[in-house]
View 1: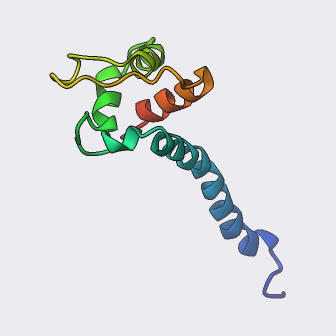
View 2: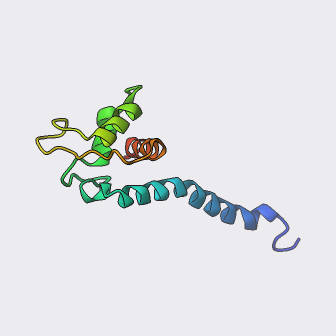
View 3: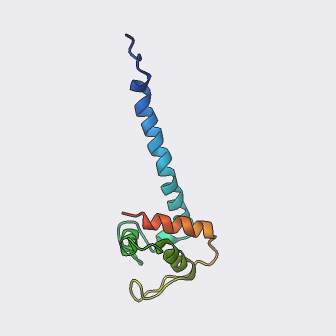
Length: 110
């Protein structure tokens, strides 16, 4: 029996690593979208900065069937009073597709 008699013995770890990288791409792409639109100047995933941590936003909206729509509206129109006195500025130029991606990304934060 040769060393690579079972092709999965060699290929499986490589295949798993590639799959994990592929699955991480949407998160990286959405983080880049957040960076591009200056979201990360006021927010972080795990800690409060000027605005709430994304994990806290996700927890607040957890279980709400219209959470994504609510968050998309808050991003587009801005908001005040939900997380304190400092308002979040509106982002009216974001496309619906980008709003949807950002809202989904924020709601997936842990």
